Length: 319
Image 1 (cartoon, one colour):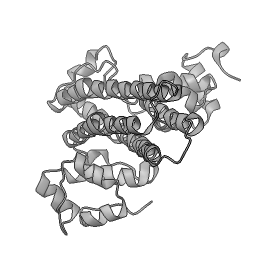
Image 2 (cartoon, rainbow, N blue to C red; image 1 turned 30 degrees about the vertical axis):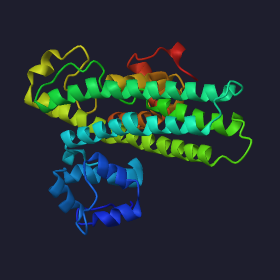
Image 3 (cartoon, rainbow, N blue to C red; image 1 turned 30 degrees about the horizontal axis):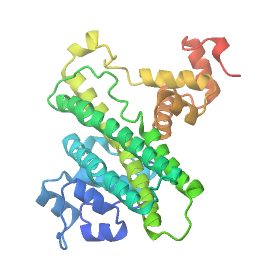
Image 4 (tube, rainbow, N blue to C red; image 1 turned 180 degrees about the vertical axis):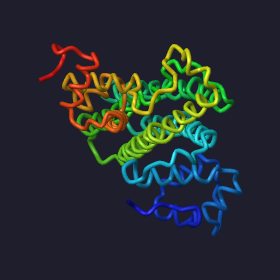
């Protein structure tokens, strides 16, 4: 496992090792000018939950495999504030800024149809990102706020925060490829190359944001739900329309059952992700949980489980 940042590390050393942490600082409302202070000291000074800040920066540095998350110590309010600020950065600054750069760097004359297609494609991409983040801001975070008040509201499939993550990332990749393969650049265009670099950085930043939501935020919210169910046992009796009832540790969730069905039908992780509108990482995480709960680690074993439990018929099984 990679060496992780600790509360006793100087924040300036963290930035020197990975410049991406500047954005994390900003989204946690930590300003520059922290001198020789440690992460713990700066977080205390700025009113930031230090374990949550460390969880995010270590995850960004190392990724999910090398940085298992200690969800117990995550402050959900602090994480929600971070995610909201990230949304503001994308919607109000980065994506509009790249569009302005695009206008300045491409030939928008009537003869250049590719330029108009690029702008149209980019505007559609922005609209998709905006809708996704608006949904999280207005619905997902409102749901979490009720959980933080001790309630257990109906979820209405609230955990599909990763539903459009892959789609957003793929569209940005398509935009890059559109430039690289088809845009008629007649001479060296430093402005256009700079825009492409910004699009690459945006793609990386958005991917990190989506993974933080998938692998830190969503598990933290599920833990919050679980804790609230223990405090409100009446919810365990009837449950709600979304099946938000306390489940035995080894019982599959509805989403996990859907993935079991897909596996039994012979689908690969990417196909499952596309069908269920999830990220591949989320499908992988679900499959690990399924293997842990069922103690079944092969696709054949999962297929047998699906047949025995009447999740699929023999005719539906991929042989």
